[in-house]
Image (cartoon, rainbow, N blue to C red; front, side):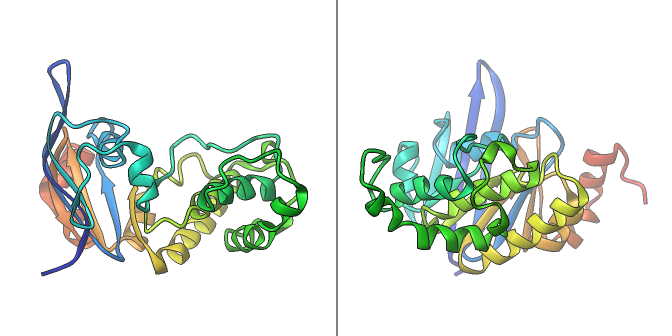
Length: 250
């Protein structure tokens, strides 16, 4: 039997009678890059919020590495290694790139936000911080305040701070949104590199990137699974073509 790191069974979320997610059975294989795609309003971000516990499901079950996390809190699943990014970049704008990563490392070392500690103690984090800064290609920006970074580089910094907490599973919510071609190519390659040692579940609208990066694709529509498989398989599915383009014709 294949090893799945995330499983949902009959997962549903209802908002005042509106079914945002309905009877979703999702399986994310360990070590894979798995994409959730679908038209706007398909329920993709709601699924992310359910898995990472920012929303509680109306029905169904969520398993992480075989453990039931349906009723867990967001901080509990994060400490278990299930960590997410957001569509809106979340960094400290007036701190440098290196300092942003150092703060994230404090969390991973259980020294949560000890701003009053001596510089000697905080400087001990610099070596690992710089490893992460280099890993995401930001070495030339290490002393630059985050607010001065180009948009694509700010998203790379967010990824570095996410990696600082040593996630086993990384959920990326539209990591390429708003980027130009150069930043898209750079970030896609970065995602490919960081995926070598972890599982990634991502929501993404850029289908060319999804095609080149992802092992498995789940297509959602109206909160339900429309199709699942490789990009080749789902792109040739008439129902998927109709959902995206309004026609099933070749």
